[in-house]
Length: 429
Image (cartoon, rainbow, N blue to C red; front, side, top):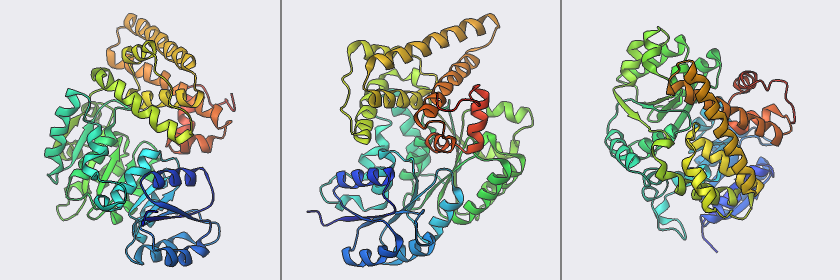
């Protein structure tokens, strides 16, 4: 039996089952504690190498207990919180957590957090270092991404802000994580703040809390173009303060030049964020990645849902290669997930064909109206988003809170998206 043990603290749940599966696959023995009252006793008995700590304990306040565990022998603690709860993330970091996962984290995200937290070169049964595993994989399969990797390597060595540009779903956060893990801050937290998922007043409050916890860390601002005027002012102070020990990475899927020209985004903040820029190409411009991405997602979701890995027929492979993927890698990931869950290639083929027809219809309509390719892509992406919303509503039987967690958006954003898609009155489907 391995000498490495992972203590998983929290109530029995689907996330706990996933954590157990991942730690066992990585060579740990998984030991469970349902309540906080037993955690310290079990901790002293087994001397774990890793702790995964659900902040929603049924019997004790979680933060003091987390702090005691983190200070006891300097064991890495990965906290688990509800999605988009930035306050819980900051509090957990202050208490000593190495990282914070949301309860909808995928197996890959859990593995990434563990590999970051634990000295991997000495982990039982593993000889791979972090640098040879997850982050290089996103650059491996196309010439465009290999060229982008060279830019990432150069920028990782610099302290400057970086603005990562690209369509929704292309993998901008993956690029930000790759920069962080190649930098000299890789042993510090990677903190994410979604500027599109929170209302302005909440966003400003979360930014203030996060700034206090971010010294020495990397702060990733997703969809920074959505930040309010007050938040932009605070961000400008952060990136302009040479004494602040914070690396700022930002991402956007909108044309920032237009926002600046329209007076919706501060020009001085844009100039600070765009000292260095990275443009992530859409998936339709790097089609050679589709086959390996499909295989990776098939294997991942087969593990997560305990299903067999579906066979990819040549007809299906060709359909996947030729579809334009307006939702990019994220859309491909969701299609493959549905494929594994349903175990039905015909259903997935029909879904892709329906999306293709909708995209072609949008093209004809917008072409007559004189709209450009960007507008066509946006319409197709909205259609893909509507399909994803319908699927999630059916899966969670109309439970909107669960849908928001699953799609990793705030409840308010979910309501806005449902209204935009004409689904605000839809319940279970």
